[in-house]
Length: 410
Image 1: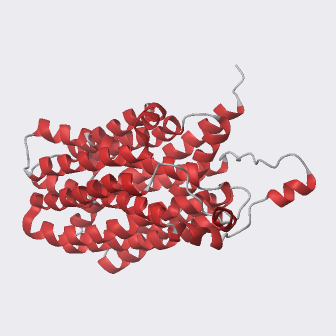
Image 2 (image 1 turned 30 degrees about the horizontal axis):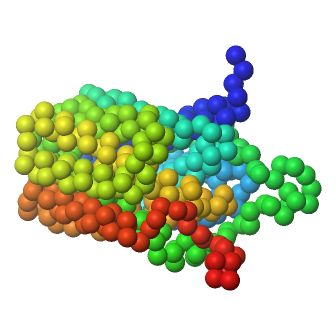
């Protein structure tokens, strides 16, 4: 049976997402416990996690902007994944806070732009070929589920250092997947002069500045950022706190996997859900779910309620993720898509998340699980902003070019 170009494109992107999130699962779930196992306190753990996010927020847009200047995205991604592999290997040889800090910063630089580049390529591929982006991206989440559970089992059997091996496995797999990354067909494949004129300029700083200055675009991203930042307590300390309650690494991995499984279900029906709700309502839904989720976890409930709270991850992450990507895919030209994705990622999982992590570290040292009330507060702020978007944005595509601005004023 012959596979269409669109299906082949989607399949290759699915492999790239799966390999990337295999390693990311180990980092997301078990890096903080690994640091804790090295004898670092909550403030030190929060600081290194926060600075890593700051580094990503700086180097993500830079790396994506540079990648937008390459004809083929596989070239920068291969280099980035090779550097990621080297940094994972380096973790075997560091044993104090300073050396670990340096290696983690190197890892953060190497991985900063990988996700937005892949997502940008997949979004535009979905637009051109007509496949469902959510169903392609969900394989990253499926890999996360399997990896978080399997890594937890490995840690229970061999100790916390198994986390490093898992991280390296993901980095190597992602490097290999980069070599088979599909090429996005251009709109200018016809011929000669027109093709040359239609090629996107390298390093479009002007277009990037137009995005940064657009008030509605930034308002939407700030709303998204508050929802993402509400996860700081969970990302930084859920595994540590659950371990203190006697949960095994396997059970912790399962709890994380349940959340990502709910995210996968949302991605399966992403096209239908996005068309029904639209990006603004999806932001509202995500913010409301965040309030409920963190309030539940603040009470250290019985295990069935913990499982229920984890199912809300499908909304607190999945809904806001799809809502923000829907906006970006409609409003940003091809030559700025990776840059726009990186600005989005840099703001919501970089600047906002790093600040929230530092505050969470201070609060967790004194209040433990009650720190989830801080997450609920951030979710409440996001809900108010999402409701306010109704009065400043009509849902239409936004303009990010100077020419479009000039035309609209004439």
